[in-house]
Image (cartoon, rainbow, N blue to C red; front, top):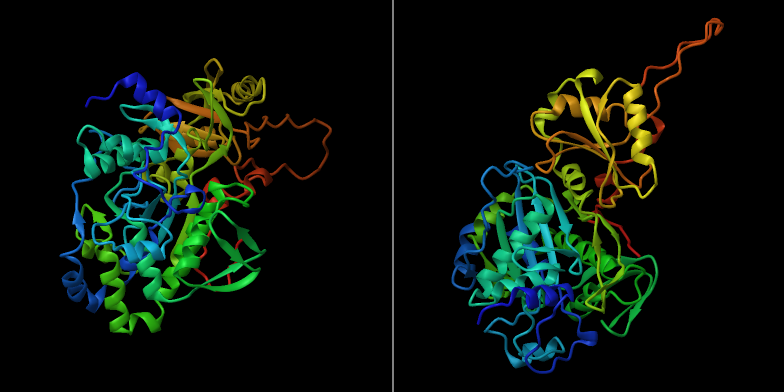
Length: 497
């Protein structure tokens, strides 16, 4: 059956959720995330366990050809670092029994083809640092070949016309690559059952809340302070979105926090030095995984990783508005697509070419100013200050809304970008394939071009000379977008709301 493009686009805009096969007994119809088992598994498949682990897993894991090469000439912003897309949903592996499904308060009904949890695990080249980057499921994004839709529907559309799980994985990967600029190197999809079984084998996992949490939809009912969660309570904890100030965005925090706490549990001596428990964990996760690669290879990349070095972040967003598509209301997460490249660069670091560049002279630098701040006249005012400083300034224009003021530049114009960034305290310089020249995009963070210093008065006397201008003004002392949004939940004693 072919897909009608117009109908497909309309369905994507509505955030289409494909129909279920039979009734389900999940509170509020919330799909359960299930990526924790993958992170746990990767952290233990190292050293002396490797050969044993391979024998335990090789016959159970489903291999699929999921990876989508980036377009020729596309910029790989993080070089040799690895990006693993971890996908959690409630698809049911064939080996799930009715009894196991009953434990989860659900049925063996096939589950959903929409993905619920999408996290890119970004691992540094030496494997010692990692950041879990959450992509909210309701992010309203461009899905290649479909149109605008919620991110969690990309997998579903890829399965159509015989695409199956491989087609779903490829379209989801393509969507996330186009959105973030990151190259996805590997893909791992884990079922609801895999999540549950791994947590069950690990035993109680400790969490700490600043305030009580109670939600009848997910079933969570926890006091303030420290709690020890069994497998069912863990499912309720990571499912919660009702009763939280920011719904799905706060649920991302729940998931990031739980993954970090589970990593601490896995790497404790009581787990690593217990071969029976290790065997049970590896056996539990194996049959619930789809991946493009050998899991031992993934584990090798993470051989130096420790819980304290795992950070968590969520892509920058502009709110959770309700929009109207075709007359129907649709609640979405609005992604800050303009600020996203700056956020990613904050995680992966500046390109070496920019770091080594020497700022060009203003007279040798042409710059265009775009207004994404929502403040009328901001671009014109910034352009006037740039002109007064000797820059060659084009006509001002507008940009989509963004929080982050940034200096976008194409490869080869690092020196000119550095000259502009020096007079915009706090702006982030970002290499981009979407601009042909240096472009200053003003965001709602209020950062703009500092006015040139007024000439000294002849009768100023012997007052001290003014300090030289610097991009490290009081305004730029604020943390970068990435350091503001990146959290570390892997340390002992961390509590969340």
